[in-house]
Image 1 (spheres, helix red, strand yellow):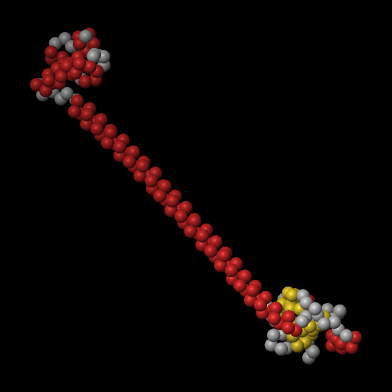
Image 2: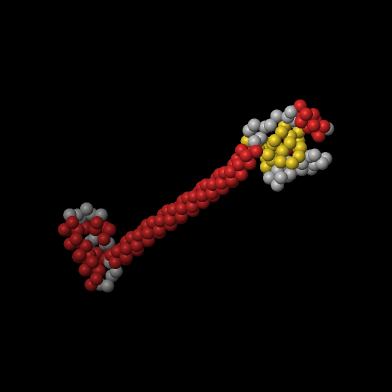
Length: 206
């Protein structure tokens, strides 16, 4: 078989036989190892490189390269996962901060509303009438009128059919003003104008 398949006519021809040629003969394992030993001993005695060490070193290098690539891929994957976790944590922190800000804003608005209610209720209850908030500034045009500032609270005591109302400010100022400059916040009983008062109101409005 060595003569037919490997072309070995004499012992010196073993120099040209390598491990791959022996493996290609399909010999039983024991015979293959024996033939490989004969070929390698022959080459060793004559100082001929067998090529087996080179094949082993190449295989080892390939295995090391593949292992290094696998580690690199794993490291890159772990790095992507780490960055994704950090991004998720940052988004969660931003959402929490926004939620806390919204809750704090709502709490402040509720406190302000409660303060307005507590400030308006005693005044309207004690004096009767209704409370109104000033929408726009108004400058009094006559002595009987009352100037208004946006955001002020007015205690409305009388309402004239012409659209002019009489009221007073928290500082005690009393006078007439256009109803279109205010918005009623709390409706209560407003003292009706008596005939004499209505006539006086018309005169004041005029």
